[in-house]
Amino acid sequence: MTEHHRRPVPLAKCYRLITHGPTILVSASHEGQRDIMAAAWNMGVDFDPPKISVVLDKASWTRRLLEASGTFVVQVPSLAQVNIVQTVGNTSGQQLSEEQGTDKFSRYDLKTFAGEQLDAPLLEGCVAWLECKLLVDANNQNEHDLFLAEVISAQADDRVFKDGHWDFTGHDQLRTLHHVAGGHYLVIGEAVQGVEIEV
Amino acid sequence: MTEHHRRPVPLAKCYRLITHGPTILVSASHEGQRDIMAAAWNMGVDFDPPKISVVLDKASWTRRLLEASGTFVVQVPSLAQVNIVQTVGNTSGQQLSEEQGTDKFSRYDLKTFAGEQLDAPLLEGCVAWLECKLLVDANNQNEHDLFLAEVISAQADDRVFKDGHWDFTGHDQLRTLHHVAGGHYLVIGEAVQGVEIEV
Image 1 (cartoon, rainbow over the protein chains, first blue to last red):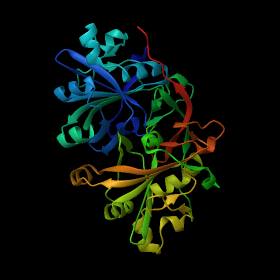
Image 2: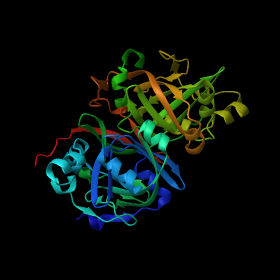
Image 3: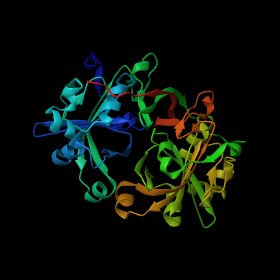
Image 4: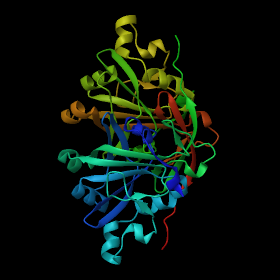
């Protein structure tokens, strides 16, 4: 059970959960509806308060829900979830709802839990979760599909994120996924320390 | 010599050079001055025309040069360059210039070559290069340190980027770097294919 491994991450260090460039899952809920999607285009934007940015296609149902609610969750999925990432990245929640009267969470049996700050669903089995408050910017959203948000709560799996650093040694199935294109991902590897060159 | 391995990447596929979330190096030149810096916060923004976004600290000299010239280069460094990345990420080109009358390229003996479209220096030994034209957005730049740009030319090392995909097998020193914090990086690992779940 991953819930035994979830630990709060101080907001001052939450940028470290996505700075290494993983593909993320974005979930949102509004008035009883909920959705989740994959987003490879995301990045940190500021440290204090912590801010992030993510690109969300206009066709996505998750986007409409988070525009309506003003909140969303970023979660960092693991190698064990690669087929979930691929599936929710290629499936429209709106189509599911209209055609089948269900949502992605029900359809794919995705287990969720409540956030510390938000009602939006947090997906079990991920290795990090960032609860976010949308910083509304009409120009960025409409012109560039670019969403800015402040992180208001963060958690991570303490088996692989400890003392502010990732360490996946011995937990290969919890390594983060880094999308390239068309369902082709690279899995994050080993750590290395850079040293400044002396001249 | 890496120059024998540089191949053009079609603009339609250049987003694949950074979608997996590597830390990049940003270089720029203006009126005889040049600089290079590291930037972990970067992402794709659009496919056609290809657009990217990168966060650049106000204190950086590279930022001032690219604001003046309206152009810059994004390059994807490799594991073999980890100390270069760490060094240019922690050194101010402006300080160097004022105190020592030199620039980072000279100081650290960094070899460069000319771009296909731009004069800005491209760093040898990287595994991908994207020449970019700044899409000026005063609000994003001033409020969020967020820069948007259109990619106008792209190249990659054909030993590790072929047919639109990364494959680092047999070239461990050319693997991309993914910064976490404080000189601590993760190196990209192996490939995996996601498959949609059937229900």
